[in-house]
Image 1 (cartoon, rainbow, N blue to C red):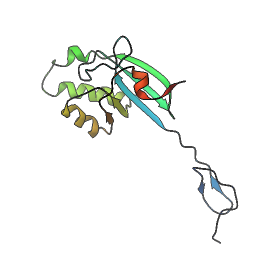
Image 2 (cartoon, rainbow, N blue to C red; image 1 turned 90 degrees about the horizontal axis):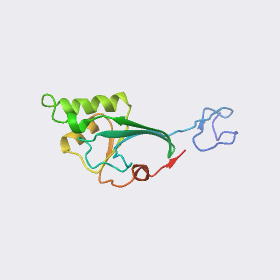
Image 3 (tube, rainbow, N blue to C red; image 1 turned 45 degrees about the vertical axis):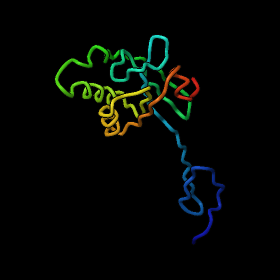
Image 4 (cartoon, rainbow, N blue to C red; image 1 turned 60 degrees about the vertical axis):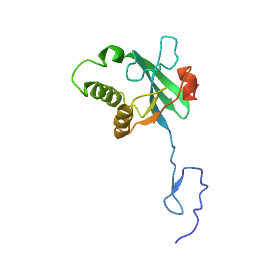
Length: 137
C-alpha cells in the first residue's frame, strides 16, 4: 500500500511506511579554531599565533571555549621545511577542528587546512566571540 503517511510529520522526520516515522533530530556541531590575543580579539597572525581558542558550537551557541597556548610564534621557523604545517595539522586533527576563522593566512596553510576538510574563513577582525556570530550558553 502506498500513499501519504497517516502519522503527523515534523521537519526532519523520515517516513518509513504508513504507520512508522523515524524522528530525526539534526544537531549542528562545529569545532571552531581562532587565533586570539590576551584581550580576546582575533590575532592577525594565524600561523604565528601564540594562542588559539577551540570553541565547540552547537546550533549557534558556544558550549565550550578552550584556550590553548600553541606558541606557533616561536615554533614557526623551528625544524625542517614543512614541520610547521605538520604541527598545525596535528593540532587541528587532535582537536577535531572543522572550521578556522582568521584575519589572514598563507596560501599553503589554507590549502593544507582544506585538504583536512576544514572550512577556512578569512578577513575577520575584532572580538573573537563576536566574529563567530554565535551566543554564549
